[in-house]
Amino acid sequence: MNSTAQSTLFSRQKLGFHYFPDTFHYTEKDLQQWLPLLMDLGVGWLVLRTEINRAIPEYFINGLLKAGIQPVIQFPLSLQSPPDLKAISPLVEVYSDWGASFHQFFDRPNTHQSWPANQWAQQDLVERFLDRYLPLAGLSVETGAFPLFPPLEPGGNFWDTTFLRAALQAIERRKLTALLDRLILAIYGWTFQRPLNWGEGGPQNWPEARPYFTPPHSQDQQGFRSFDWYSAISEAVLQKRCPMILLQAGLPTAPEKLSMNLEKLPEVQENYVEILNGLNAYSQTQSKNNPMMVHLPEEIIGVNFWLLSAEQGTSFTAFAWFEEAQPVSKAASYLCKLKNVQTNRLRLPGILDEESLRKAIRPLQHYLYLGENEEARLASVFQKHSSFILQHHPTIGFSLDEARLANRITLAVTPDQVPPEVLETFQKQGCQIDWLE
Image 1 (cartoon, rainbow, N blue to C red):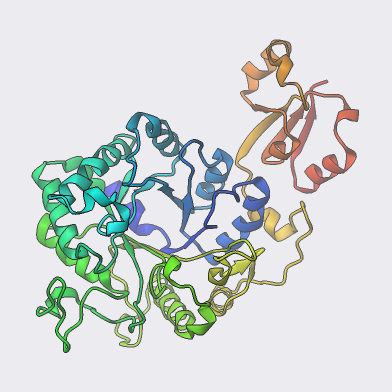
Image 2 (cartoon, one colour; image 1 turned 180 degrees about the vertical axis):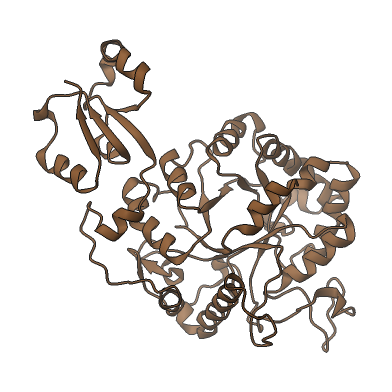
């Protein structure tokens, strides 16, 4: 990894969140609702789920990037049915072109449920996984992005540290230097209901721990500090400590295994607060000699909490930190206090308050609105306005909702075709309005 790329990785704010657990909250309204809060909190990462057949809207990605927030794109790929590289390559390329440069392919390949039943017990599991993973990771590298080695389940049916060591050795043996130069390790920051310092120091501090066996007086990687063990492996195999991104930091285990309400696990919120204190101390370059503080090594570039928000009445509701940009958990309230973020600001539907307006990012510079239901006459409309389009290169569309994302809006319609209240909203949001006709 060149020095510029490495500097970009390590200079970013470490605090991050998993966004909604679905793909239904990528509208302009969602961007306007959440972006000011994310900026106020100093968020540097946002884990986003994409669909395989269509991309997250460009304006959503650009809005985050302009606010200094790096998306981590999770592709919904399964080892049960390996993807067609030709089908997914356009999606990888477009995200990289937009600047969404961190890509996660697959999840927990060291568990039997990730594989078809007739393939799990076959020989050379790690090699067979790499045969599926490496073409995708290589595609990501070719586009200038950073592929994430998928998070493993600590312990797992195939012991995770053994799996990781074998995978890194195989990648090095194949001499995939370009991949190793940009490889990021994704790690689940689960606690397994153990103290946050469980396993701290890795195998150097706990040399008696072995795969599938941890003596009663010893500790292992099945805790929040699994990253200490992974760092030791990457340093032993590659002679360097790979950058790492924590996912679902502070959860006891995988969300689908937590059928009980999180209120019955009060230590979860306490763990969140401790981790937040550690992140705040790191960002403020405070002393790291406090034994009570959660210390994160430099190679941890992102710490993502599950979840920023979720639809009410779903199985994910209990995990939400915020609802409609207001804190609904102890950890969220603590974070807002830590960052001096006001949580009682009045928000009018469809109109940003002045503070949010100042901070919100409109991802489009210029939008040419051609009117509703004009798609059928697209060729004639383009011909009619060709000189204007060639001169100004605006984004062209037929939606007033999309037009609101632009700093400048040119209306190629008559005034009676735009509701007065919409014009008023544009003006209140500071958009420059021009009429072409």
